[in-house]
Length: 598
Image 1 (cartoon, helix red, strand yellow):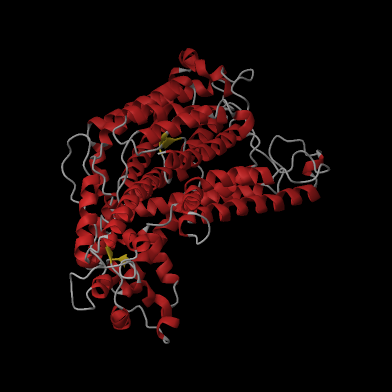
Image 2 (cartoon, rainbow, N blue to C red; image 1 turned 30 degrees about the vertical axis):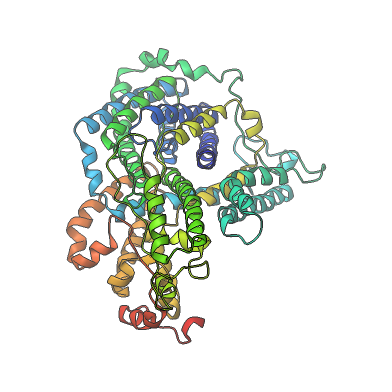
């Protein structure tokens, strides 16, 4: 549990600290990283204990930051409100928002979430990845500029030093990005012992944050102290840090007209949270994860309503379900369960080989071990999962001598490699990892002096890492890559495990469908650049429901649309090499001119 807990802790804490720094600039210091960390930690702890879906990760999200920024711009120049009553007014906004969320939950509004198919979910996931990458790029560009509210006469803001700061920021951010991505694949390295590779794969990203933070202290002593730039936030125990925690006392000072008018931004936030929270929950419990516990969309939305009221009364921005952290949490727990299962099956397979078992007996022994590990401590409906079938090539090799009961060895069944192909995706479902990471986020408040030593450029590299890390498993992204693959090499996709639509849908249909989805994605991304209206981008995602039901069937065959928008990510095994070329040509994937060497 410790590895996924640490992984998600960094995925939650670093963006929240960044959003706090962004709010500090946009609200003239009224809201800082102290408030965003407090909200994320508090809401995460409560949800991990009381929430219906503990795999869902809560945190202060970018849309919340944008909404609070727009609300501050609205009140700051109004004499009857002003910055003094900003948090009191946002508390009323949170009260109205919670009221609407209660209505959504009680009236069963989340039932529409079941109509959000893979098209909408993956498009939204890719949109969030683009927003994270956009934040990383913006942050790196800002490293070359003078920050707001800074003295432009300081040495560190002279043109030559600004350029040096920017270039050093590129080194730190790309260093973290590259090393973080490499460390996640450490288990497949040829070097080092198994436990060391596993340690790097599990804890490599947090370790890289520490390593590149240490590298940031390498410049010589004559470099100005502000290079590289580091996180800025007041300490929780600083004077005035707790001034907003008693905002409830000032709520009655807000004029009645503004109390009623708070319903307008509350409506936008409620719709945003309804969609964002529910889709994050949906992506965290996709069918391919094979979760045992059922969903609880309405109950979780009800819990979110109480959390929004609590945050509003405390003067901190609310937290809601976040992407890509929620599906990343589930994937990390699936990796953990995979490793636990794999270790047991490796022992069983080696023992079977030592006792001269046949390929059939070896498979039965592993199946029995797998089923034994499925037995829960309390009664649950028996799972429908089982080991995948052995590869045809393995069975053919085992029976090449004409005797199906002949003993097998590792030349026939490679224990270290072939077992991975047999294991289905499973998730270690529990509440502990979410609870622990939320406690760790809350504990960052006490570690603020240490956090302020992290360079902002390391943070931008981590944003880019999260964007890229969320892409694997996204069928939409895989189809985009397929479109950019050279025609002479597209057939290679059939030589490995691949999605079912690869063999059932013609390539031209896949291309047209992907171009439509990409255009829609760019439209959603474009609207986020429009002030105020940018907050309505979830409405474009919700519009995909009627588009999927009533518009797309007019342009695509029902069977093709069903394959491209399948609820579950199903895979076909690799095709034998002797039929790959003919199958690729029939499907329109092109054909290599030089066999396997093209």
